[in-house]
Structures are given as C-alpha cells and as structure tokens.
Length: 402
Ligand SMILES: NC(=O)c1ccc[n+]([C@@H]2O[C@H](COP(=O)([O-])OP(=O)(O)OC[C@H]3O[C@@H](n4cnc5c(N)ncnc54)[C@H](O)[C@@H]3O)[C@@H](O)[C@H]2O)c1
Image (cartoon, rainbow, N blue to C red; front, top):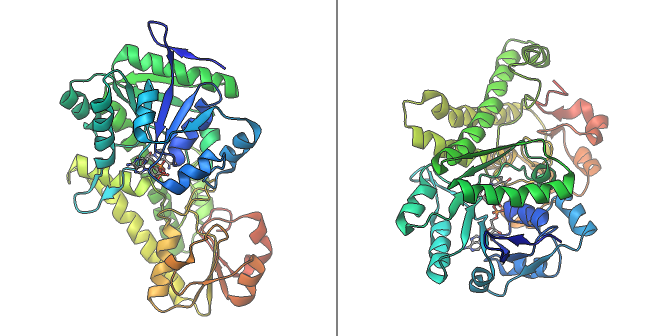
C-alpha cells in the first residue's frame, strides 16, 4: 500500500463525496493504493457500500470488488469525511436545470462551502461536469486556490476499464497542485494496469471545463450525424451500411462510434449538449442544432414504429452505446413511453428494472422467448447475438442489421 505524502511529508487521506458511477469508479481505482473515505447522501447506498456491496450494475467494477479487499471506509457523516481527508473528490450530480438550460451546481456549491467552513487546508477536486467558469468562480469567491477541476471521461457499464485506460488526464488549476494530483492517479493506474500510454494536460480551469463539454457535444453531434445519414439512406432506398462504411474509410473520419441508433441518451450527453449550446449562444448554430436533430430522430423512430401493425415488444432499454447497461435518460425509454401514450400495447424485456411503477401500462416479460411469443415486432436499439434467431421480426437501426 502506497501512502501519499504532501510536500512536507504528512500522509494524506482521500475523501470522495458522491458514490454514484464516477465516485465509485474513482474509489475502486484509488482504494487499491490509498486509504479512501466515502460519503453519500443516500442512506441505502451508504449501507450497501459499508457492507462491501457495489450498488451499481457495472461488471467492470464488480470484478475488482470481488478480486480485492479495497481500502475504503464509509464515513458516519460528511463532517467526519471532511475532517479525515486531505484531498476531497466531488463526484456529485449536475442535473440540467430545464428552465435555465444550465447544469445545476447547487449541490457542489453547498458542499464546497461546508468543506471550507470546516477547514482550509484541503485540496478539492471536482470530477463532476460543470459549466465553464464554475471552478474559477469558486476559487475567486473563497480566495482559495486549492480547488481543481478534473473532468471525468468514463462510460457507464465500462467505468473501471475506462478508469485504468484513460487517453488523457485533464486537470484545470494551479500547476504544482495539479501535478501532485496527477501523480496520485498515475501511480494508481500504473499499479492497476501498467498503463502509461496517455497524456497529462494541465490547463486553466475554464479550459478543462470546456474540454469536457466540447468532447461530449462532439460525441453527441457524431451520433446525430450518422443518424441523419441513416435517415437519408432509408428515404432513398439506399444502404446505410455501405455509405457509412465507405465514408468512415477516411482516417480523418474513422471507423468508430458510427452506428445509427434511436438517438443519443444517457445521463451525460443530453444535458451537456444543452449546457454547451446555452454557453455558446444562438449564433453557434451547429451545436445548437444537435439536440433538435436528436429529438427529430426519436420522433421519426416513434412514427415509424407507430405505423407498424401488431404488438410491439422492446428488447432492453439501454442507451445507444453497446457497453452500457444504464437506462438513465435512454432514447429508447422516450420512444417506448410515447408509444404507450399513443395507446399502443407495449411489451418489455428489461431484467435490470426492479421498480416497475415508473413504467405504467408497459407489460413486462421475463425472457426474450416470452417477448417473441407475445409480439409481432421486436424493437432493439442494439443488436446482440441472442437476437439472431428473431431476425425476421427485429426493428433496429444498428449498423449490423441494416
Ligand atoms: N455517469 C458517467 O458515466 C459520467 C461520466 C463522466 C462525468 N460524469 C459527471 O459526473 C457527475 C456525477 O455523475 P454520476 O453518473 O456519478 O452521478 P450519479 O447520479 O451516479 O451519482 C451521484 C451520487 O451523488 C449522491 N449525492 C447527491 N447529492 C448529494 C449530496 N448532497 N451529498 C452527498 N452525495 C450526494 C447521489 O446519491 C449519488 O449517489 C455528473 O456531473 C456527471 O455529469 C458522469
């Protein structure tokens, strides 16, 4: 076990506030090397984690929890975490405020206030996605330079693999402090994965925040772009696959992340695109139109499905990336809900859903076979091997089936 020392040689403890996808992915990496204190507002989550149970559906993390006795401790209160930690990582939600179009940073602001009222020698690392200018505003408000922003790029469902295989580590803030935090992650990644094949990029906080928002906007734009190719090809009776395969032979475009889908979704892309557009203003017509393109995409899929005869069955609801099992803000959920609203009879096979109350009028089935025997059409955003035998009744825009 490596203990981190600060410049004058004291051992340092790491605290993480917010035990969701980002918080637990960071904890899983860092607690292999260092002592990590955790805290979350959710009591049930706290109990599970304290009992060494991972409260997330993510195999990549689960395997590490099984393999190692991670060196973490759930604190009895937020105050005790603040007291015990020399470095505090904030992995808190920044949901979209639908009225303002900005990410809601209230939770982070309150916690930073709590930390700095309690003590003034902690290094605070913001791993949440925040609006451009947010970290700088905290540094100025508290006249406290030990606040860094370190955008996170992991994908849900693949969190640990992404954690130990970063392509870049971006840190926005004071240079020496940023380097120290980099060493912390570098050593943990090196031990976990022997990987040094990534870049460290230290920059101003505003720039680091911009990197995250523009990265997510680009990814969303790419999804929307290939979906528009798919729309054009379908309208003109052309092969989407042949067109996309040939377009992507150009290495400047690249043969990755290019399968048509029902639209981008997930916790991050929808909200981050809206925030980026809001920050840039209406003149940034390209970024402003990504969200609209995605909404139109979903509507076209809804109308097409609604025009089909017979009973519709949905196979899984996870969003457009194959790796993730998350159904948070998934485009498929929006599509399914609208069909139900229009009075269509809808079946669903989604074993990850425990709370069925949120899916009023949806008929749940327990297997793909049961879905098949009840439905004329099986809707799947992504094609998997288990769907092969039902090919004749699949509705999908996945590149592997169009
Ligand atoms: N999910 C991803 O793949 C991903 C990737 C990169 C960046 N991000 C960003 O990271 C941030 C966190 O995302 P996430 O997916 O981990 O969210 P999450 O919803 O999975 O986890 C957030 C956690 O914070 C807890 N929480 C809420 N309020 C709290 C409070 N006042 N005190 C303590 N805990 C509190 C919640 O109970 C929850 O466990 C967001 O800004 C998101 O945009 C997420």
